[in-house]
Amino acid sequence: MEQHMKRIIAAAAFTGAALLAACAVTEPEPELPSGRALFMENCAACHGAGGRGDGPLAAGLPRAPADLTQLRPAGEPFPMVHVMSYIDGYFRQDDPAQVMPEYSQLFTGPTLYVDTSDGILTPTPHPLVALSDYLETLQEG
Image (cartoon, rainbow, N blue to C red; front, top):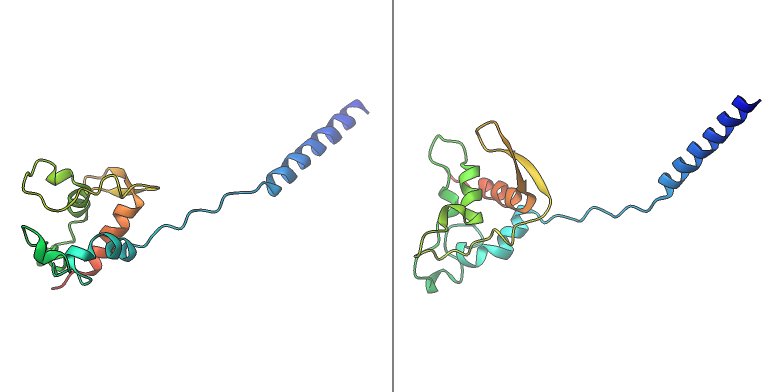
């Protein structure tokens, strides 16, 4: 009888815990911006809506913005890691003539694991990956 009572109590406790877990309110996942939305909000003013370096602010810059439709060398894969590092500011941090802002503080948030071509999966902010993926869609030729 005592063993039977212990089983009933354990089952009741398990059922109660399961019901509490099922009723727990979970926070909805935040909606992450698309790469296109990030581009239009942060890049198009200088690089233009099509990424050709002809945005409305381009004429007033001391150096012409890059044509982002030409980032992939002919016959080569898209240089995603280099592009993300450039946007982030890593490759440009010591360039005194740099015109483009450093976006390392802006493009943060949930991370994805990206193969940086050395077989190592590197945690990378989702917005940076999304923007790079969008830039890949702009490539011509």
